[in-house]
Image (cartoon, rainbow, N blue to C red; front, side, top):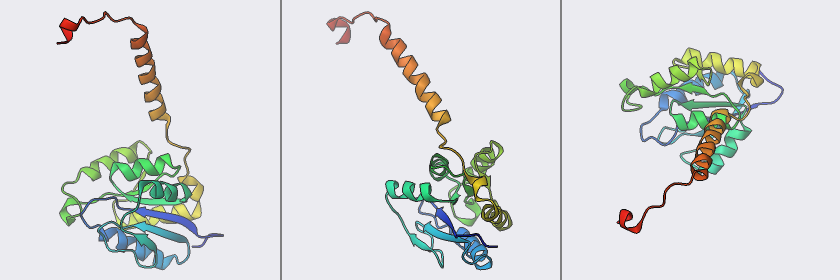
Amino acid sequence: MSTARPLNGVVTVGTDHHRFDRLMDWLERWDAGNPGAVRWIVQHGSSRPMSGADGFAMTSRAELLELLRAADVVVTQGGPGGIMDSRECGTIPIVVPRLARLDEVVDDHQVAFVRQLARDGRLIAAQSETELHAALDRAVLDPAALSVGADTSDVSQTVARFAAAVSQLLASKPARLSRRAVR
């Protein structure tokens, strides 16, 4: 599988102290079968670095957002930060939830979270190596399928409603409190 140019891929495992080497293993095996298809940059946290990829343990939020904006494909763990940052930067993420039974996280909250967001069409869930590889194969064949406009609609609507409520409150003339009432 090859593309005219390698896709820009970003992997982020977040800042949790638990290792997520399983994700690195899965990505390395896919990459070995698809050499040169994706140029990976990996934020690996406390996990081992991904072989054959540029990477770092941690970086600034600004740098991570810049990388996400330039990405054709994003693979992330199931925490809300990476998922929402990816969407806000224009990419539907491929998400592998961490598992408690593998000591990747304290409980399986990511599994339920990822399933719900996948049902809502906000991400592509990859709960197995086969699912991750299939999602990456689809991304290479049609990178535009992972592209979304900046995902600010919910935020923008909420901000607009909040601004309207504040304006309404400020427009009404509340009774002034006497100094005695404030004490």
